[in-house]
Length: 204
Image 1 (cartoon, rainbow, N blue to C red):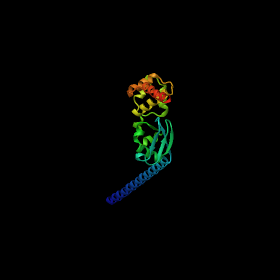
Image 2: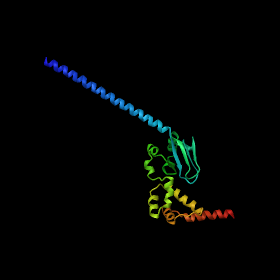
Image 3: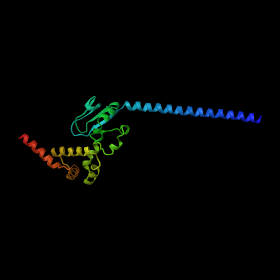
């Protein structure tokens, strides 16, 4: 009788364990389903929003949704020009214009999108429009500390801004000009004077 009783208890324990396993499995499946639903909702909400792109290039800049300038074309006519691009197009723009995105000719003003496109490392060396303009308010040491760490293309952008300002006879700190010349191995003052002389000759 004792053996039979133990056998019955063993069966009950086994059934109980099986029920616990089934319950645990059901809970895990329910949790997984909830996570999938939330993920789909997040993806849906992301794909419905627009992404802000800001041109940092002095001249005209075109970004296309397909390679070789095909597909939808987004035109940025000047420095600081802003366009909001639908999420699904923004992903295509990044994919087909990686060089422009990574060298800082255009700035994406959306941290979540930058992360989703795995551009965080690139953006450690890229300044936005306001920070580029604020550089001109810094002293030589502060300017050089930042200028030395940004992309070569953004260094070129800053050089072009200086040239434009000097041609318009706007004031630019000479120390800043010297730093840019040092890093770009250029002579901004001579280039500006040459441009002015050509303009003067044409007008005569």
